[in-house]
Image (cartoon, rainbow, N blue to C red; front, side):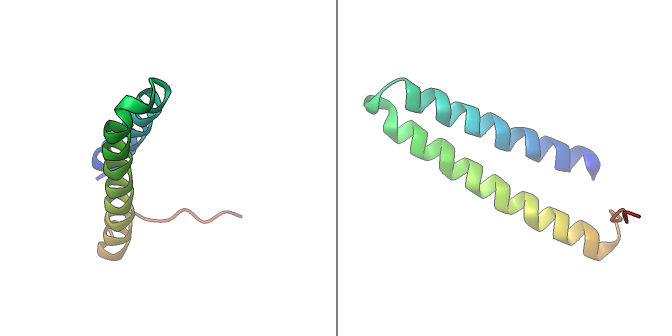
Length: 66
């Protein structure tokens, strides 16, 4: 479960980096930037749902701060 969460988080960061590279290369690559940002939002929602499901099913446990 932790590997899946970490992999999804790394994919979100990679997609954000791809969008940044597309944005900085000029207006002719705006379609690729929008696609990369769409992928990032989709992965972020999937990560959130994965965290909620993992917590609900008991696969991950929250740590309490003292």
